[in-house]
Image (cartoon, rainbow, N blue to C red; front, side, top):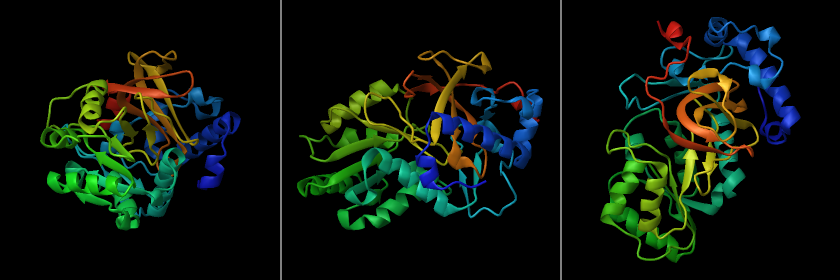
Length: 328
C-alpha cells in the first residue's frame, strides 16, 4: 500500500480515520508479526470499526522481528543506538527516497523551505555509528545547503562556535541540531554573549549514557540561558518511525497531517488515557505503510485536547501484555 505526499497532506479528521482503518486492514494481512500480535490480544480485525480499536505494536518488537508489510527488498535499514543494552531496533525502509520526501515535508510544514536554512549538526553519538535515520535526513539537508555554511561537528566546539557567529553575522537562518549531552558539553565551554539573529537551537533528546538524565524543562532552561534564547525547539522521532513531530516552544509537540499521537494508560495499555493525563504515548504514522503504522512507544507523556503532546520521560520494564509472548 503506497501513499503520495499530496494525499497525505490533505487529510481531514474523517479522511484520517478512514485511512487508518484501511491501512490497519492492509497491515494486518501483510505483516505477519503484527497479525500475530493482534491475535495474542484477541483482536478480530473484522470487528475493528474505529481507529481507537486498532492495536498499537510495542516498538520493542522491532528488536526481535522483521516488521515489513509486503514482500520487498529494503533499500535501507535504519537502526537504533542500543544505548540501554537491550539490543538494536531495525526498521526496513522500502524506498529511501520516500523517507527523504516525508522527513523534508515534516520539517517544511513547521519551518519553511529547507533551502532557506543553514544546518549545524552537533550529533557525535549518531555520527559514531551506522544506520541512523537522523543522520540520513540531515546529511541530505547539509549537502543541499553547504553554501549557506551547513556542516557536521563531532567534538570540534571551537569551530562550531565560530561558524555560529559567522552565520549570524551574515543574517542567515541557522538551525543548530544537537543531541542533549553534546549541547550541554558545548555550553560548558562556550556561552553566546548576545542574541544571534536567526538562530534556532533544536534538541533531539537523549543523554545516550553520557550524562545523568534531566527533565526537558530543566534542559531547556539551561540552553536558553547559554544561547540567549527565549525558547528551545525539539524534534520527536525514532528509528521505528518515518515521520517526525516538532515542538517549536513550550515543549508542546505537533504532528504533520498524516501523523497522530495518542495516549494509553500505563497500567492498562489497551485503554485510552483521558486528555491531559499522563500515560504511554502511541503513534499513528501513515508514512510507515511499508512497515507498521500503529506503534506504542516507550515514552511517558500527555496528549492535549488540541492534539499537541508532551514527552515527560521513558518507561522502564514496560513490556505490554503479549509483547513478552512475541519475544519468547
